[in-house]
Image: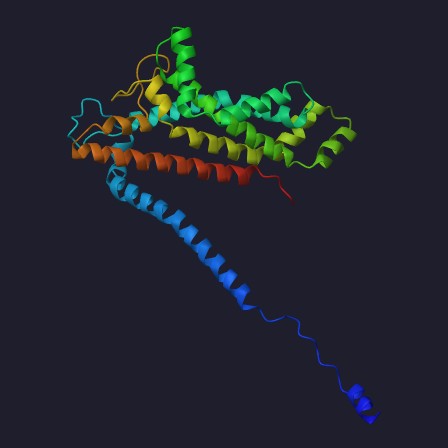
Amino acid sequence: MSSTTTDLAKPAKPAETFLPISGARKFKNRAAAVVFTVCFLLAVIPLVALLYKVISAGLPAVLNPTWWTNSLFLVAPSSMAGGVGHAIYGSLVQALIAAIISIPLGVAAGIMLVEYPDSKLARPTTFMVDVLAGVPSVVAAIFIFGVWVTFLQLSLSAFAVSLALVLLMLPLIVRSTEEMLKLVPDELREASYALGVPKWKTIVSVVVPTALSGMISGMFLAIARVMGETAPVLILVGYTASYNYDLFEGNMASLPLLIYNQLSNPNEAGQYRIWGAALTLIIIIALANVLATFAAKALAPKTK
């Protein structure tokens, strides 16, 4: 009896909060960490090697001020003179024309899929967007060639390249617009409807401005994605070493087409232009991504 009383008088020992980790669990945790680290290195090492090669080989060309403005008109294949201004102009103009055509169409399609899901056009549009998303660039170029050159009997031109780029940009813009509109809270729509605002005005004044930052990011990413396409420029327009300001007649250079053209140049100047053009293209695409980031932050809905 006394022993029982003594035991009850003693303070209870606190139970252990955490049990000791078993050896098997420690092994699995370390094995997973090793696997993740190896996968990360396998993904990063080729990227770092690629950037090192492009920057080291293309930096001398990019640092030359005339590289950004001059063309290769009347420049010998073995000469280090000239620049890629004509190719930069061609890449930007072709991407700009494609953006002017594809952005309104893509945004309108995205709005219809989210705001009018019961429309008879919703399911066919979703199907066609999924199909376009998986179409290779060479197939899009061949389709435009068949319509523009074979059927309409028009000449190869930079505008035909832009039409092929439209087919590649559309699914990206539609999907990004669709996903951003889905993130808009339904409460905003319902509050607008409660105030007597019609649906079309709610979409224009409430829904689209709320999702605009993400939509613009998707647009810039779509432009950056198509600027490096090679198949459309190889099939739908020829290369020229000079500036061409006519979108509907004559050849027009672009950075991917210039790189392909210089692959047949066995001189040191060929490698100089290839790596310089590759680094130039990377810089332009990186600037497009930076602009998309700044645009998204500037147009994001203000919470305060």
